[in-house]
Length: 306
Image 1 (cartoon, helix red, strand yellow):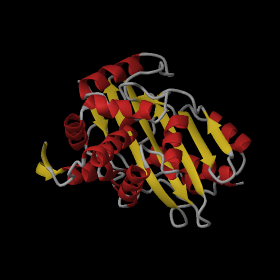
Image 2: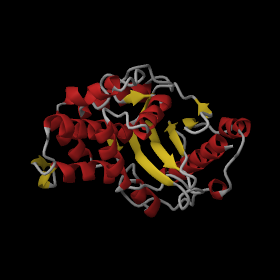
Image 3: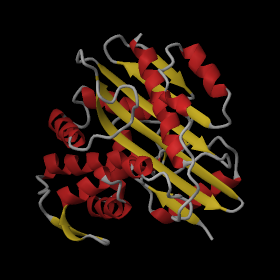
Image 4: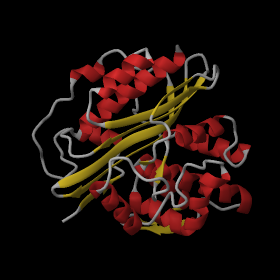
């Protein structure tokens, strides 16, 4: 029997350490390693050496938009982006709002939610990473339209089926779990850290479709802040989307977690960042995954600022 879990909110993961995302039943407490509460690493060589000591696949791309400094690791490797790809559905929603005067107060049916407005469905999709809302919005907007957004933005490393239906995604994850650790290019819902960070660089420059669409998206993300950092949470503004999933085919499983962000510093500088981790049968809980990747994020930010 397969177990497929995707789109869990990071608030739920971090606040419920006793819940197993594999079975949904209580699991033994595993305290998060205190190492990941330490100060960020400030040199790329040290961060790379640190990450080389773990069996996990971990990559990132960060760019300081003021200085142009880039920090990267496996930035061009194709990886499953899980719920991060929901930003493209959100983009299409606001593209249609601008081009076709789409009324976001118009209602659609969402499984387990009833008849709610497009705006409320978008809130569920981004704020709670609700998959039913995402699929309903995608069907309403047109899956081909959503899948075309990356190419409209020049993000050529993104899959041309960036938001597939769930059956196609399941087939893709089966290929991952029984295949090589490194994914083939252009698998559904796959893309690179470089392109996802570039999306947020375009957003910071009001170049996601248009200035008005970009501002709508920034305003929307501002209403849905997420705890993607340990060290910088109280100091910086984080706008973006995270994702995680678990695909379980005993005796194997595949797990992904990551996020893509636009950060604003206290001096009004901007950093774009995408961090991801892919886990195969290593024993690390979702809580530990989140803490691990927050430590990697904080270190990438620290290096990009130096």
